[in-house]
Length: 60
Image (cartoon, rainbow, N blue to C red; front, side):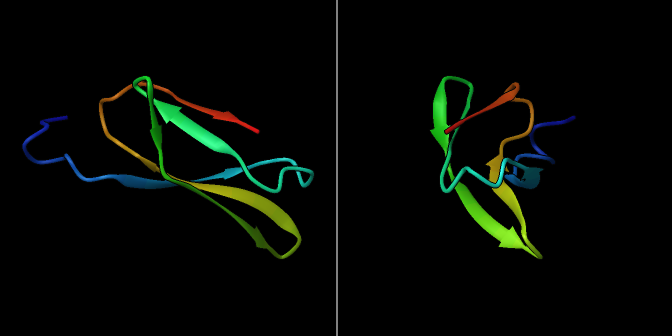
């Protein structure tokens, strides 16, 4: 993707274990914002991913 057109964070919704009350997210060797939410009894991590910056790693 052309970084001059697509350089805004994307919010990803990732299902996580119900035992995780919090988590950390890392992309391109930097911590990125993550929020844990519960929707209808299911835990999700909402992660602000950056396009073209590599994979996202979640850890408890």
